[in-house]
Picture 1 (cartoon, rainbow, N blue to C red):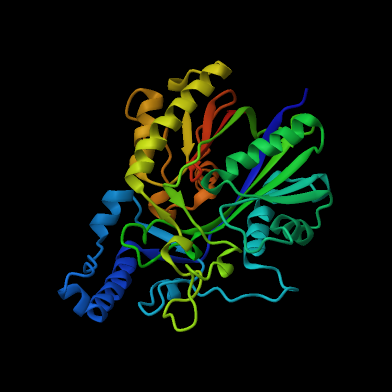
Picture 2 (picture 1 turned 30 degrees about the horizontal axis):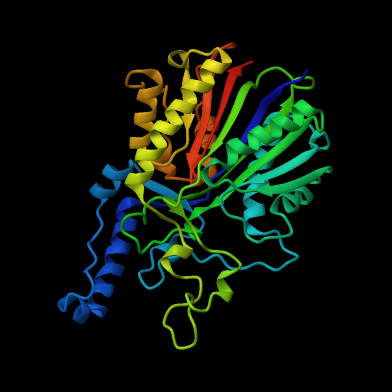
Length: 382
């Protein structure tokens, strides 16, 4: 029976980047203005004054030093604190499809085969620009791919869930090759006025081509096994959706100074300490258990490409899996430069850090995040 092979990957990185120092300057200016506007309530004890952010706080809490974004000016404007991403006409390629096409073309070029051999397109990401038409179908048309496409959202685990779905299509014989793209415009769902999370996310897009071993050429990565897990939790949440406009009792109405959909829970919110406590053991145990099922010794993994949310989480998972402190080339970290890019993080790490592998060496692509959700993909260099 044919099995899945990760044949090629691609990466689109926006041109603009924001350093921690720039982000802190913007946030602190916004917070100072807010404190001035609410000075009376603060003095009377009705509300608490906002605390300034700092570079030291961000790097200690997350390990993040910078992030790429589609629009730097809007994020750093203390009067706005959000990216400016204009809507495009229905006949224009959407911004997320444009990102996906750029990443996909890089993967296709590395693959070296015509798009006519791709039978399906999956768009796996934490947010979609609209309910329909599916972004995957828009990307499919832009690239001239026949077959079918659809969108899927499992938040930060979308890419590993996408690889699993693609591998299942391969195993069933439905298609011979699948293109999966992960366009993430995380800056658009981040509350840049929340000190605890204003530094977390960045924008990016990754692409993966998963192919049948029957048709795969030399190179690439055999997919040895995939496993998925979900456990419901409110500790990471975003309540923005199409029903918001009808919830007049909780959304803005005439005379309010806040626009509908702009409440804090309509953007990314999380309880970070609870997430850390819940997710680290869940993911560590899942990795070890799945490795055992596949006959892989976890301590023998040459490299782990983990979800890039928080350096402390990654270091702890690495120690639990390997039974020791991982070396830098065993537990890849790219979030210092890219920040958290949701589903794309582990794929960025995989795309950029495949050096040093010989045929037969094994590695792990792993995601974890909202849901809770987690996915493990063990691979072996061909």
